[in-house]
Image (cartoon, rainbow, N blue to C red; front, side, top):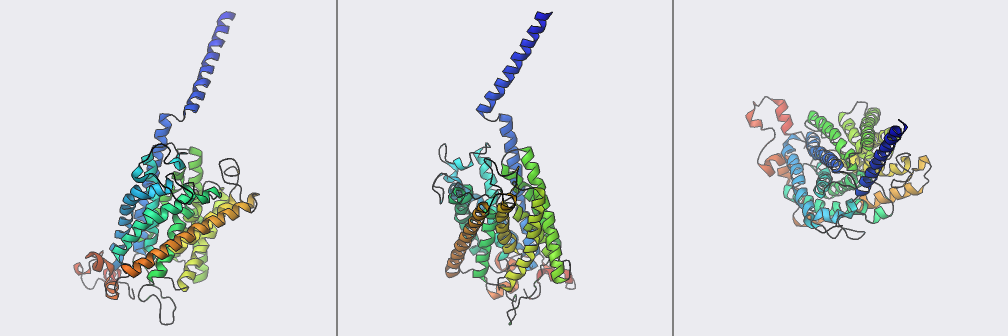
Length: 466
């Protein structure tokens, strides 16, 4: 009996040893095929959610502008992703992630190149084409951000040229500095999902574009004071905000590029907290400033909170996320009013939502990064408020200012060149008629199909003074 028991114990011991040995061998060999498949599925689903954000941008931008320009707005959104797909595949992905120097990648055109070409993405085990698709939808987003700020007065052909240069050159080069192992990454800048890389670059490029293009006809009176030019469909805009809120659950958690349950759950929670507190902050500030619960400001507060949490979402706690985004929600109201009074016409609030709040979110990481999500090997250092000192805050501040400043400068030069060659603005007659008819030969709301006494349809087609 003792020998039988001893034999059974030896068998169990051998089985345990074999199991441990197999697990160690599996770990040494890398993730299993099942894990790679699960990671890939998650990355592609998250990428699809980010792609769907194009619909959200289209609805927000179209709703906040005159109905006579609605088709023009959605056409620009559509072409942004169309052009991005081709340009990022051919050139942009290689410039951003290919092996090169501290300034830009120098290999990987058309996803080609040998082993090691995309070492900057080697931390993810998903197939190269999955990595490409996920990064592509971010490139398309960066270009689309600009379209809302210059809506209603830019020539369609000129905008297509901008979209090409943005997705092929400007966004990939600046992205390489941070995500491709470039000089800002070497200095220690952290930006988990793109407060600066995507939103800051898009928002500050939008500021340059709006300055060069100039305001809409009738936006400023003879005294230089801005006039209200309300959007034609706020219901369309709030639907777009909800779509963007949903899409951000791919934008931020998907940036893990791995099906890591704990990380994804944490990022979902901080992202959602940001949207809610951003809305609350914008509602409170706008109510105090204007005496009304302003809808467009509250909508933008949601987006401001989401933009600001994008950099630190994986590295801060829930309480910090709420504070950061509450500040971002209030900041967006003050910023929109300030930029408008400075003579820059931004019908959607793009510059503040993406540009200003993108900078704030990246800097906030240097303030609020905390354990266990920061402060150890492979993670950003602790923020100033959690014992990390001033160094992380300095790096975050310098890095986002450098990247956003470069985006502004590049876009300003590009739009100035376009103004001198192709011209950027439609004629006053085309502007008054509406870009839907002038540029596309169609109308989102064809008033000739309705009785003349249908004021709601007519008002959607032409907002007075726009």
